[in-house]
Image 1: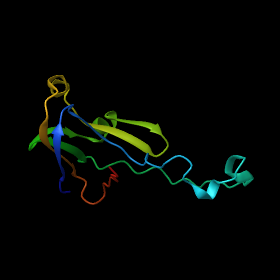
Image 2: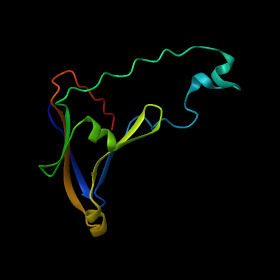
Image 3: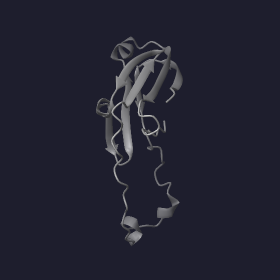
Length: 128
């Protein structure tokens, strides 16, 4: 896979997280207006998808800062950088530079990451 590259201006803290789907405003779902019970008193059974298959053995997630690869992680190592605070919400720490945070100086930073190995079998969805 190719690199996803972000050119970030005036970075001071050196902390980059990837997050997904937590941007819905409160009470924005018009479908549930007026409901006083869970699911509007309707019963439905959820049909959950099967868990995804394991990634290929050569699967890697690579992170680069200012053109230098700072991390090259297998699936287990990458998962160790992530937390799942809610259903379908995964937050992963891509870069955590405590020295930069102590300096607290503005600097432009190029942050890039990619999936390597696995060919087209390994897929990752990224929202922001």
